[in-house]
Length: 189
Image (cartoon, rainbow, N blue to C red; front, side, top):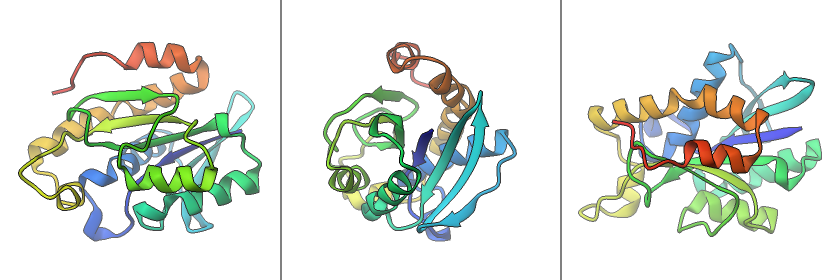
């Protein structure tokens, strides 16, 4: 069994913000598979089977900095191994239009990842980071929860359009091969 988590903030006021890139990625994949979300443990989730393995997609519905509270409930309830958890989130240190996959690492100041690490007692979980760039002229918090201009949203749409391929490849190949395939220098424009 695998748990694939897209991070974001719940509520209309956070739609189309940079911090909700993980939600967008999960939503795009769920639509491609005609999956409907249900609510449990303060999360919106859906399940599907892939070659006999149960896969859970999750969008925590507590605010970003409390995401770990929801992730740990799903992990414990479904008895999911740490190595079978994939977290998808925005990343300020990665250029807009670029995808970066990692096995483990620090939170990099990302409050959602900090809270997940707190609850998992580990930073050794797989992640897909969706670049949102950074803007030194704006306060970091205002920037990540600020609405994206249309040009940026269009680029994020192209990135999330790859969700079906990336998630299916994640289920099919080793994470090393997945990183080799998607950790390119290519920036989607």
